[in-house]
Amino acid sequence: MVPIVIVAGSVLLLLLLVIVFKLSAFFSLVITSLVVGVALGMPASGVVVSIEKGMGSTLGSLTMILGFGVMLGKLIADGGGVQQISTRLVDAFGLRNIQWAMVVIGFAVGIPMFYNVGFVILVPFIFAIAAQTGLPLIYVGLPMLASLSVTHGYLPPHPGPTAIGTLYQADMGLTLIYGIAVAIPAVVLGGVVLSRMLKGIHPSPPAQFMELATPPMSRPPGFFVSLFTGLFPVLLIALASLLSLALPADSAIMGVVSFVGNPVIALLIAVFVAVFTMGLARGRTMKEVMDSVEESARSIVMILLIIGAAGSFKQVLVDSGVGDHIAAWAGALSLSPLVLVWVIAAIIRVALGSATVAGLMAAGIALPLIGTTDTNAELMVLATGAGSLMFSHVNDTGFWMFKEYFGLSIRDTIVSWSLMESIVSVVGLLGVLVLDIWV
Image (cartoon, rainbow, N blue to C red; front, side, top):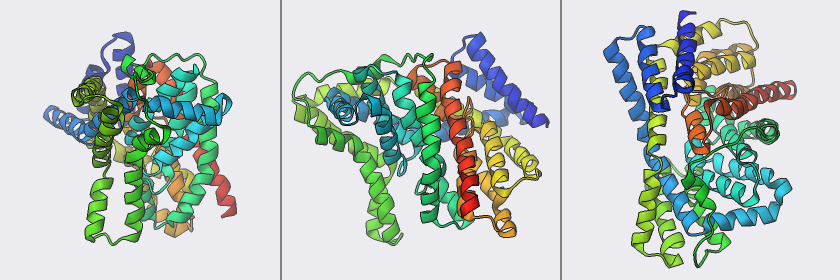
């Protein structure tokens, strides 16, 4: 139990540094990582290595994604595309149904994409619609982000659930069908219903994001051009996923498709598409377009540092072996296999922060249960994925992305983001248990 107490103490220390001492989240995360690493028995030099490894691995995958994503959003906003899309969505769905539009878009973008990619692509639309309609930012944004989170946690062909499904030898088609049935109530309760109860939260997002709703100065693009530009990286990634099911993995065409469908490359290509459709074609010079791109990149420097530090915190917890200790402790509990794998994934998620790590670790521990108990493999995938979403907090990079982009305090981030993640996790488990009665 000592490692669990240390992990809990590290979270309290982090909150103390940020809330009481008003220290920057970046410095607080680095200091907490050092303290918890030493407290868990790691040599001081090893803690530093873990911090460097965690920051490098996190930013290595996220820097270009966040960078290209914010560039794409800035280009579409400056060219008038964000306003065109948000206006059409409001007209099509109406103010009363705008949350359902957000849910649908979140599903459409989230299924083929990593969460972080979908987040940076969709955030401009959240801010624009909120500014244009006058609706609260949380009211507009949380349903969409709940959809993104659910697809990330337990809907194939998303990489995490797909990897877990492969390990369990589950049927991906059935997993997707069951997953959608479970996802709908999870998103409704965690996104739509919860957002309507959070009227006391007042985000203060960075000014550059709220400027995304500014009307274009001249020659606005058409709706379909704007939509095509905004969803272009989604189309590339989705096309790569679909073709991978039909083409041999070693074919030359598949090599090209995989390259173009890589999230970083897809976003890079989308930026150049936007340079033309939202810049040059709108009468702007290349210098004006590049100035806009550079300005957008400068705006996310601190966000990148905070996310990298969160990755360091997570890595120290992983390298210390505390995850294995917690998993072994949870594995000794006498529960239904579906509940047990959810509990294991949830505990690892709360301790380590990463949904993917929690899901895969829990799957490895629970794998023997499928053969010995005849538990439905597809439902095990969903239970594992649902558990891996439980209570995202200060050791999860997603927590800090939401906090910084929406300009929230830690308290308000926990009340909104962490609670939303907990709801979709618990509702996911309940949905799995209901399905277990029938399948």
